[in-house]
Image (cartoon, rainbow, N blue to C red; front, side, top):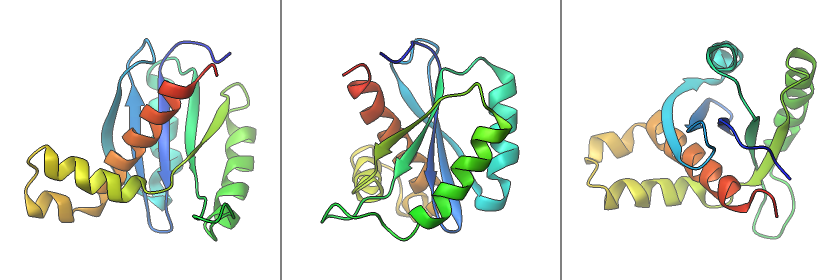
Length: 141
């Protein structure tokens, strides 16, 4: 069973990383400002020192046929580095298939302007929130 508390989600990409956080009860996922991939570690350092964290959820890049996407070759070394840097923070993986498409669709339904939807960092962060929401809905199962 996963503990209750604040979670951070990462939609890890080749150029950008979307970020999202949950509330302290681990029930609601909200997107926050995404970062260039080179700034991911610094952004996580800040988030992890601001408030206690029950875990980090990283999108798992799975293709439709169930095989892993090529970005997993970059995610795995980063996960090992994260575990060395923050050994007390559990890392969870959540399937991220279609998260970017769902993010754009969510933004359309929310009335976001075309220019807002064209901002890839915002889309990536909404995708991270969707990944986090799926994790929060499924945790403990």
